[in-house]
Amino acid sequence: MITYTVVLEYNEGYYTVTVPALPGCITQGRTKEEALEHAKEAIQGYLESLQKDGLAIPEDVELAEVAVTV
Image 1 (cartoon, rainbow, N blue to C red):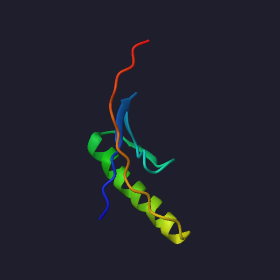
Image 2: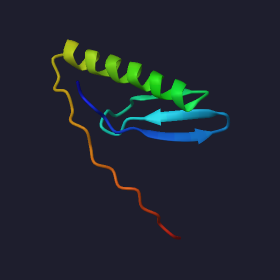
Image 3: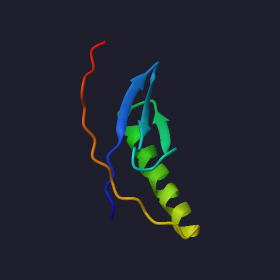
């Protein structure tokens, strides 16, 4: 079992989930729970595609939340 860090954002009635370690792996849902369930499915599909193509499974990335003032 692999654990990936995800970024969950709320915008205009939907929660969007991105997976920084898996470029292009993005999904959404109307609730946090739905979005996170969709994220699990998206990650599984992404990893299956990599395995099918004989590509390496990426490790998770470390994220830091910082604020930038401009």
